[in-house]
Image (cartoon, rainbow, N blue to C red; front, side, top):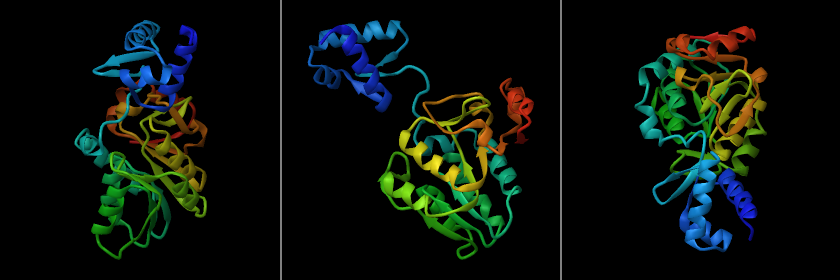
Length: 254
């Protein structure tokens, strides 16, 4: 296999896998480890990938940390975002809520309303909802494949269930949100679920703390013009990218 062909193959693998180890690359390409190391060095100089211990990852946005880690980061801001989002809702509505640290906090705040039907793929979201005032709201956990790292269900079965339903609003928390590139996720499986929820909801509400404003990750699941409301924290006032949202005339709630 020629070097250029190997480069194309490595790029293709990185487009679908978050991380590749040197041994896996050698097997995929049918070459020695030494050849793989030379290819990695060349691609790193081109800005295609980054070397990490034992392998490589794609250059650009990195995978999100585990949910337990994310819940402890900017928790105060996420709580404020969740409370602001609840004020946009009404009792008796049907909601889609995806998995994430911000939406897990949102689950606790949703108990302020009654008669909601909340459809989610988030395991932690469903647990928090069910524990807060049992019987106050109906909680539907979507079926599908379960990934302990994502703390969520995903896959074709999950998406198929979503397309059998309609919701008044979808409340989604992306890896990044950009005035031109929309709401994005790093994981293709999470993005597929979020995309289906966005399509099946009358209103799309994106919950993103200030660190996510202007950020673009690997997979777009909702174009910017499809987002009805962006809910963020006061720290976003210092983020230049927020001005693009306001210039486009889109609703921003802090």
